[in-house]
Length: 172
Image (cartoon, rainbow, N blue to C red; front, side, top):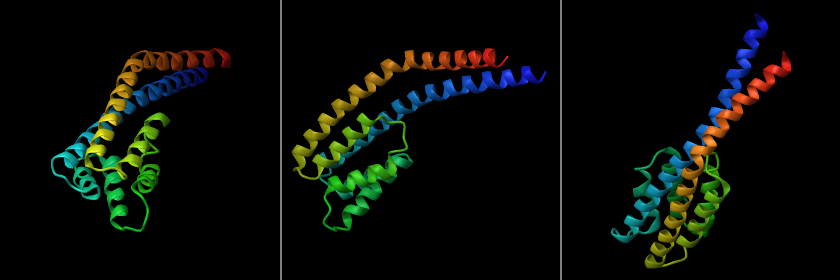
């Protein structure tokens, strides 16, 4: 009886691990879509409202979920201090503080970091061009993540269950 209970627990936990990895793929796609929303709103604030970046960050931050909104609002706060740091430096520091725990891969974070580096040095039209380029990269990342999500979800779930079955056989 104890062996059967242990075997069931092993199978359930292994399936749960597979489901967890599978869920990480869904969360990455959702976070990439939030980044896309963030950049579109930022683009609108720069293009139509003609706001300086700290004010644009503040306006956009209130309409975003927690890690992204906090990232922008604290970036704006740091920029308003005017302590000699560039936007790229502040952006990178705040990105490391707020966005590292997300399900984004390194390439996603590097692309976002490069956006922060170019935003601070350019005029409004060049900033908008940099945003358009980032949006294209983001669209490609979203399409790639969605393409791989279906097959990888099944793979992770199957590997979790198969690994659990293997462990049960090994232990019995």
